[in-house]
Amino acid sequence: MKSKSNSRNKKNHDLGKIFDKHVKHEFEDKDVNATMTTMVDEPYVHNVPTMTGGIGYDGVYNFYTNQFVGKMPKDTEIIPISRTIGKDQVVDELILRFTHDIPIDYMLPGISPTGKHVELAHVVVMKFKGNKIAHEHIYWDQGSLLAQIGMLDSKLLPVVGLKQARTLLELSKK
Image 1 (cartoon, rainbow, N blue to C red):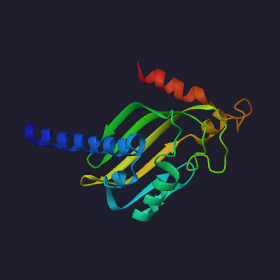
Image 2 (image 1 turned 90 degrees about the vertical axis):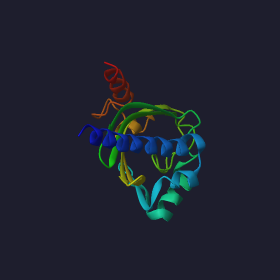
Image 3 (image 1 turned 90 degrees about the horizontal axis):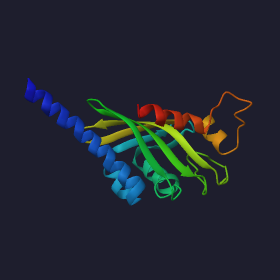
Image 4 (image 1 turned 120 degrees about the horizontal axis):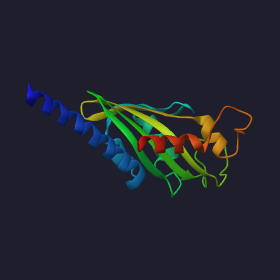
């Protein structure tokens, strides 16, 4: 029984390593082809707040090439909060920090750079088939993002902006 548990933990631990390798290819290596090697033949990526991403190999490849990989501000930083690893899924909770100094079409389609600093809580759900990523569901609070870049007035709406991510980060350290 104990060895079965250890092998399950090793398998789940490998999913975390694959997740990390995928993110490294996206954000550090900025290599679409390497990123795609971590995925199944027909994956999909769905950014829930803006409904951007891609379906199937060509859709994901085009999304990564034209809107995501190598298209983030130079000061982009990922701050991990928590990770949950299941049998065939990894869920990461994180803060994404950046300065909105370039267009970010997948997140802010049609909005010119504002120069504003952004700190945004995210949840990334990666589903696996074997040792490959089948899909990604990515969530963030679009209202908080729009408030931080000056497109929504948080005094007039129930939107908290920057305070949301900073409070999450503080609470996660307790």
